[in-house]
Image (cartoon, rainbow, N blue to C red; front, side, top):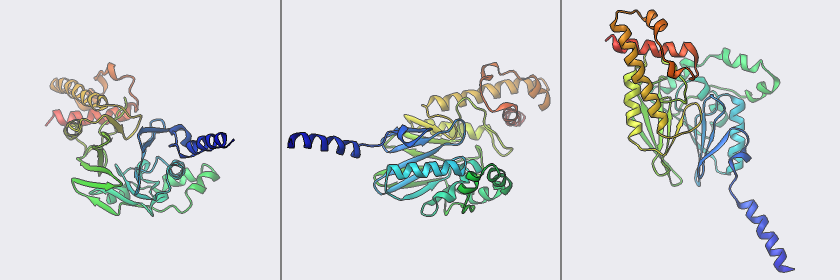
Length: 300
C-alpha cells in the first residue's frame, strides 16, 4: 500500500514539476529552446519570452495590448520571477504600444534614438480606433501611457541575467529610427529584427538604404546562428537572411538594367518583373518602397 501511494505521489509530483509545453501557454506560442518562448501571431510582430532564474527578458511587447496581456499571463504560468527587462527591436506601434503592460517593473531598453522615434510614431488615433472596437479592448487599454526606453545604447550593449548573455546590436537605418538585433551566443538564437522577413516585402522608408540592409545581414550571418527569429513571421534558419539578401541582389540588378535604359522611377515600377517573388506578401505599396530604394541606389 505504501509503495502504491509512493508511486502515485511521485507521478503527481512529476506532473507538477515538469516544464510547461508551449501549447499549454495558448495559441501562437512556440518553444525555441529551453526557457525561450516565442509569441508569433500570423504576420504580426513577434514577442519573445526569455526565462532565467533571476528574472524574465522580453523582446518587444506584442502587436497590441490584448496580445500583451496574453503574453503576461503566459509569463506568470512559466515563472514567478519578475520581468526585469523589455527590449524594443524597433520604434513602431506594433512593437511598443504594449510596453505599459510590463513597465514597471521592466526596464525598457532601445537603441539610440528609440525614445524620440517612439514618440514620433505614436498616434493616439490608432489607440482610439482599437478601443472603439469593443468593451474588452477598452479594458486592456486601461491605464495606458506611452512608455519609452529608460535605457538607450549606442552600437552594442551586453545584458547578462541568470546565466544568459544577450548581445544587443544597433542596426543601421534598416527599418525604423532605432533598430536592435539580439544575439544569444550560448543558445545560438538570433532575433534579427527587421533585417529579414518570411517571404514578405519590408516597408522601406526614405532614410533606409539597401546597402545598409545588406551590410547588417552580412554582420548577422557571420554569427552562425542556429535559430533566427524575424520581427514578423515564424522562426527559421540562416536561410531567412540568405533569401532576403538574394532578393535585394535581384532587385538591384533588374532595377539597374531598367534605369540604365533611361527609364523613370514610375516606368520602372510599371515594367519591373519579379515573377519569382509573386507569392511574397506585403502588397504593391511595400514593394514600391523597395523599388524606390533600389532606384536611389543605382542612380547614385
